[in-house]
Image (cartoon, rainbow, N blue to C red):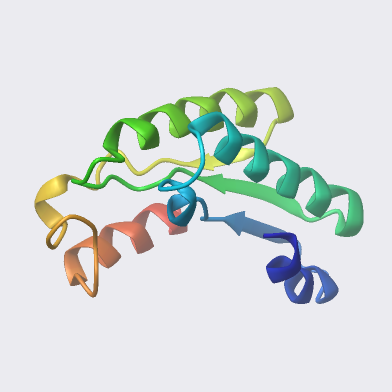
Amino acid sequence: MKSYIQPTIDNAPDRICLHIGTNDLKSKAPDDIANAIVDLAKTIQSTCGAEVVLSELTTRKDAHKESIKCVNKLLIKYSKEHQWSLVRHSNIMEKVLNRDVFDNNSDFYMWLRINLKR
């Protein structure tokens, strides 16, 4: 993940929102995903001083639903410990998802935009 964020860090933004982690659900444990997000957030803070905003993983209807809940619990804990803002997505319900996960679903993206603007 660190290599993907480097171009953003190079631009020295005031704030970086990390909305990441769902692609790792198939291959990593919830603790590992949350810890990787926290490590990336710490890297951002130490290299460019940007305010870090964590974004919860969004709900899914597939087998990874419980893992998302675990990751999100950890993100809540870590955001409090490090005084990072946290974007909550509890208003994104399964009914706005297509199939098992979201894909080009206007309702999902509407709620995501609303949450990120808060």
